[in-house]
Length: 601
DNA sequence: CGGCATACG
DNA sequence: CGTA
DNA sequence: GCCG
Image (cartoon, rainbow, N blue to C red):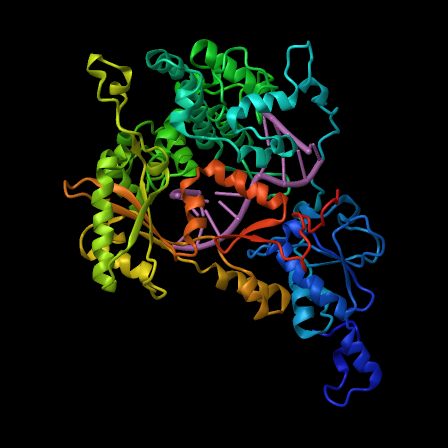
């Protein structure tokens, strides 16, 4: 209500010089601590504040130990809860005497109104139970000695030599200077190449490479189990979402093995492969020696697994069953856990539990499925079968026909992307009438088919993606959403959304709008009906010709490749923005996620 | 000990 | 939360 | 879990 700065009663017009000065520097003397990482909008909002606040007399810092901090921003979630956990110990409540805690909206409104707002009206919600987050007792540093990487008993390879061997012919001298994210981008993750590695004769290659491939596949399976187990995301003590570290570690290891230029043999040492440490090297060795490993076997039998200290990991039972549940569209880790907890073990169990609604055991709540889940269960045979290469041409023709009909333009460029492109097999060796193993390799099935659509000369309007969906529905090639089938549109609306966020948090508008954009593209997630009546997941991505090269990188690369790419970009002078790879402008020195410049610790 | 990719429906 |  |  009233601004403590005394401006509340100042006449609006005819301001006295003192009042004017007060109004031009309404935040004089304020030093604001901003936990950028926890702030909605993050460093972009911080940068906007940095442009506005000095003009009002305030200074900003991200250093919780800095002297003279008068205000600490405690970010407030949309639901009103305050994130006290992001404050450094020095500023933890009650904090130094005189320190004021405010939400981000105090800053935004102060900027917007060019006037210091009443801190009391922007007080963050009290911390739950007012208890500081429990700090685990300081543990002895595990001290995974860096020196172990080198010549422990004269056998381990020096790091550069290991990288050289790992990359093989792809190695260049520059690789010696790269960090892991960049190094990971140098690999060749081609599945066929992986299969070929270390093998000169065809028969021998197939036998040898089967074991090699088993490593990759087993690791990938482990990764999936971990995701079903924990959910793809965990929460750190500050409540921030972080990726599941075990899952990520398995993904890393699978990548390292997939691109390894030589045939692995037990024992595999952590020095050999990037991103593979003691734990994972042991797993790989066990897989090489026995074809599997203890954890994998336990997961496959739905048994709980033990951690490295021998303790049973809570909630680790049922991983295989839950993994199977999550293969249904619309069922993620959470729903799968709920089904498991109800004692459901098969798809049939789920269908039965849903059908006997109200007739279940006393006290048990009826199982309610949403439309997506009902559809997925009903058509699970089709959907779990996946998409074969033979379906692709039919899909492409349907997309082309719809586009030509909608726009009158011919010459649409429809490119297969995604896993079905990455894993396309070369023509099978037809000479093998004598039973070459290659002829027994089953045709690949992919969970969906992805098509990237563009046109080199025709310019389309904003809602072509929506029209395309409607046309495909009208032609009965994809199923409408009211069936419960997946039929979603994703549009590039992020520019609007982020601009609104910026308006909300900075009081700014307009000029910032051009700086923010989405790296998502107009996109249909659909369920395709083949001429034979089978249902297949199909995605269509619509891009302009100038978006195409960037979009292809993102859509042909694997998830892991995309993560390495973005991690590398975030380390350096590049960003992926608006679907493009752009240089950080010179005027805005590159900052890390704490808003610090290069070289900052 | 912090970081680990990111955004839409 | 589910999906890419 | 692995890395810097």
